[in-house]
Length: 183
Length: 237
Image (cartoon, rainbow over all chains, first blue to last red; front, side):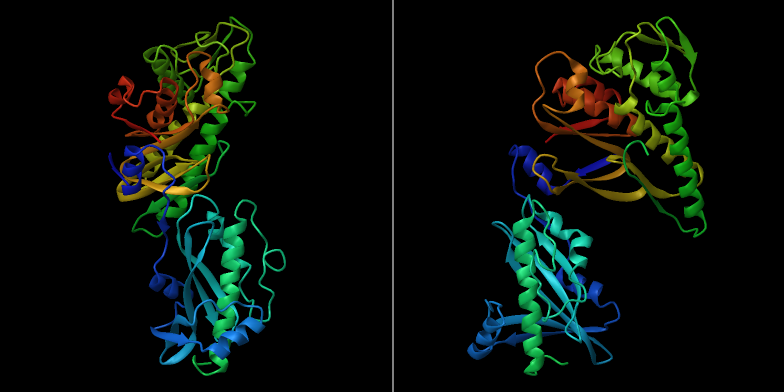
């Protein structure tokens, strides 16, 4: 028998109960491969939105937040298969890292939580919750309580991840329309 | 099964082996549940509970093995380990394969030890079937064998969430939560109440990991002498 305590456990044992809590489930690369298993390359690209484009997003009811977005374009033999955008939103007080896979037609292919750092609200990782996003696009409401169900006890995580996904879908849509991403 | 979800993981090079072994392991677990669970009318334990004082019954070999271990723990822990859950710690006695009931009120419950034994049996079956590497997890009573370091995450029952705790190689691991509303609290009926805590025990065999979590929690002693006797280690967290 051999037991090797995780670093977090030794820390927790030494310093009595602690709420420190951080789990990295996937790297951005792993998530991208998971979402587009057929892709043979992921081209990194930074999409920069100008002031007018940010206003356009605002008009769609999406706060643009950031002008620069890093997107991975999934490619197979040079042809684009879709996009993977990684982002972070605040859960309650800590950041949740997540990735959104968007198909070439602008619909959501997959959502993955990359890292979660809080003791509560981890239920956003549940596959059933994340599956609700699949197939939705910029025309969908993408709001908790409308087309996305809340999880009791994880309201803030659900709301913030959903807002983040709505923003990403809108940004990808806009970038495709203006030719900043292949479509 | 056993009031929980059971997971069996098998790693082997022979593609035909896993399904048959998997099914056989589940069949073993089902047979054990039928003889150990107090909720199965025909189990040895349910039949014992229905007996009047002074009567006895012949128990099956698996029941005997679990009761023998429970008896050893009862004696070695001065009654802290109590499968009668307070209904009569000394009102049962095992004589060979005869289980005697000494008091009408005594009711046995192998909830604190039976799952661990069942996991050991399932692992033994897989090893006998030449499965090199795998694990059996009965709702957190876990045993892993072969060349694998299995990561263990512990769920925080009071605050929610899970956190990585350790990796385990060739051994067993069990965690219990104890506190004001935990059943083990009722079982002791003595001493000061244990503080709210999770207790984890790693041991070579799952029966001891499962049972020793109760002894550590009730005694509050993560260095309880019984741990060393069974090659176990405990953590309160």
